[in-house]
Each structure stands twice: as structure tokens, then as C-alpha cells.
Amino acid sequence: MSPIRPNALKRLRRTPPAKQRGDEPLYSAHEKHKLIMAHANARGERPDWGLGYYIGIAASCLVVVTGWWLTLGTNLRTHVPTQDPSVQRLQKDIKDLREKLSTIHEKSELQAEALKKTAAHIQAMTTSTQ
Image 1 (cartoon, rainbow, N blue to C red):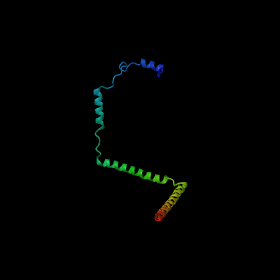
Image 2 (image 1 turned 90 degrees about the vertical axis):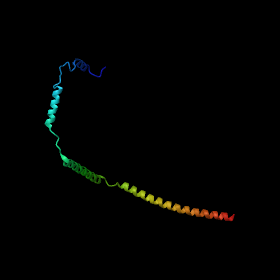
Image 3 (image 1 turned 90 degrees about the horizontal axis):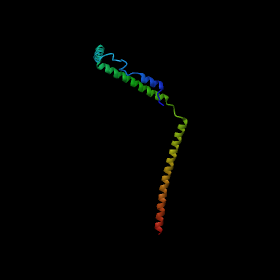
Image 4 (image 1 turned 30 degrees about the horizontal axis):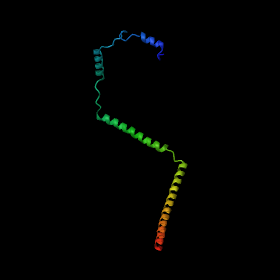
């Protein structure tokens, strides 16, 4: 079965091509050219705005971009919520844990030095008794 409805197919078959219907262009190529040229002449020359016009455009853009930038910065500063108390507690706990680990590390280094001295002393004693 065709996706196009049967009535639509009949209409398509009955419609004659454009040339058989008597459709002719409204204007000849020469008339189109004359119409286009008349329109172009009626519009006139493009005005020479000079450097001041372009400086004004650049200044306007600068004002808009600067205003946007300042507003964005203000919005970011005012709409960022303060830190959650649970995050502050977590940061404090992490800081305490680092301090404890640092203390443990320092003590373990001291004990390692003491063990090295003891091992050297024991080795010296065993070699002197032999």
C-alpha cells in the first residue's frame, strides 16, 4: 500500500505540467534587469559613515561587554551559598587527621633511628664477643 492517499495520487495525475497550464513569466529577462537597476538607483549610494561611526560601535560593544562582565561577577559572588556546616566539620576532621598522621610519622622516624642505634650496638657487641 502506498503511503500517499489514493485521492492525492489522482489529483497529481490530473494536474498538467506548468507549461501546459499557460504559466508564463511575468517579466522578460530585459524587463527584470531594468527593474533591478531602477531599484538599485532608487536606493542610492551607501553613506560613508567614517571612522567615528566605527569607534561608536566599538565603544557601545565595550560598554555592553563590561556591564555583562561586572554583573556576572556580582551574581556569582552574591548567589554562591556559604559553606555547609558538615563540609566545614569534614575539613576540620581532615586537618586534625593530617596533624595526627604527621605526629605519628615523626615518632616512627625517631623510633626507627633508635632501632638502628640499638641494632648497631647489638651487632657491635656480638662481633666483639666472638
